[in-house]
Image 1 (cartoon, protein in one colour):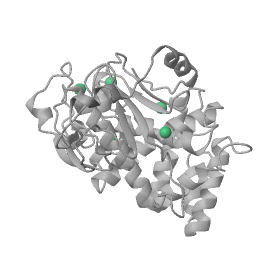
Image 2 (cartoon, helix red, strand yellow):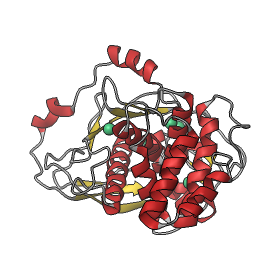
Image 3 (tube, rainbow, N blue to C red):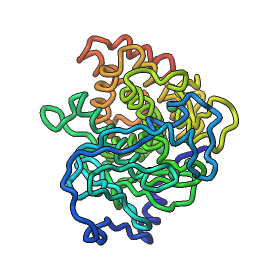
Amino acid sequence: MPFRPTRRILLAILFSVVAATAPMAVSAKAPAAGCHTGSGMVFFPNPIVSSGDETLTDRKDSDYDLLNDERVDKPLTALDGSGYLRGTWAVVINEVGDPAYSSTCTYNFTRHDDGFEQVMAYYWVTKSQDYLHALGFDGGDWPLINGDQQRIRINQWGVDNSYATDHPKDEMRFGKGGVDDAEDAEVILHELGHQIHFSQSASFFDSNEGGSISEGFGDYWAADVVEWALGGPGGVTSACIMDWDATSYTSSIPHCLRTLNAGLTYPDDLTDEVHHDGKIWSQALWDLRTAIGPTHADTAILWAQFGWGGANETMTDLATLIVAQAQSRYGQGAAAYAAFAARGILS
Ligand SMILES: [Ca+2]
Ligand SMILES: [Ca+2]
Ligand SMILES: [Ca+2]
Ligand SMILES: [Ca+2]
Ligand SMILES: [Zn+2]
């Protein structure tokens, strides 16, 4: 399915009939592990990027050697010692299967096991928070961003979509249609982009342009955090979002749900569909990142996003705030302005 809407209204209905429960009830069957760091096998960020092989396919969630070999062993941090995937920045909830548990805090699953997606979600949500801390948003001089224990539900949701919501629960949920969504770090990070917005302003979804900005930022955040995690560009697929998930519903190569270089401009290409319109915003952010570097770009973007709302509710408004941040912090206002002007957002 080509769209990943964040539907707050629909979610309110969903959550009135689906009671989510933390895996407290099963904690008695195993001893607490007591470890606060561990390790787990993850895709880094997804098997298309890591292998460069665009011919890999889902094969109905089966395990096979080419995919098993794309898993890498990564540290899991900030665990709460319970032996479950619960920690300072993320808590994984699985109310229909077994929540992943390890008495040694070693979480090695293959992708056919739902535990694999649980590890992916815990790892990448924590990794994103690590990046925010590295930028300076650590709760000291600068505020935390999405600094809650992010709820993530990994269970048997059969549709090919995922979403983030902030009410009635602050939660992310990942579907299992096509490639299981949480097998692709870029899906996880896209939804986390919405959570970042929820934590910064209550009104990102009150307008169509706000929703478009959030979809665009989610795509940008996926590529941005992946490049940071990889320590450099992710090959030709850097601007290609959700390469692995997209193998289920795209035939052209590279497989991308969306890209960060669609070449659309504001306001002529606006269609009132937030994922489409978000491509204007995501390209501006990506070009800004290229122009002034990820640390300066992300610091300016994230600080500016606290100013969303009130009189600032268009792409032009938020771009103006980002340019002001780039100028006051780094003297790079002109370069920032150029990135938004190229998309028609500033003129
Ligand atoms: Ca799977
Ligand atoms: Ca999918
Ligand atoms: Ca949150
Ligand atoms: Ca990608
Ligand atoms: Zn979205």
